[in-house]
Length: 103
Image (tube, rainbow, N blue to C red):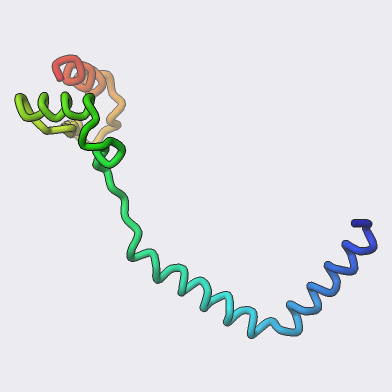
């Protein structure tokens, strides 16, 4: 495609968009709302079991381990300094390090 054809197409396209701007704006809004209406059906599954079949030997061993011990996957520690000072003080960072080692 040479430059003349590209410029001719760009000119025709821009003229079309300018001429039909309001129907195009309305159509684009309708398309956006239609696409957004499907967002209520979207979800995020954090269960890693969806990637494995029920007869996967590694998954069976993992589930047996969880039945024996525990099924808790995570834990959250929250630390805050005594004052409203910066959290990146040596004492706060030492507390984070100690907690990390003990955990």
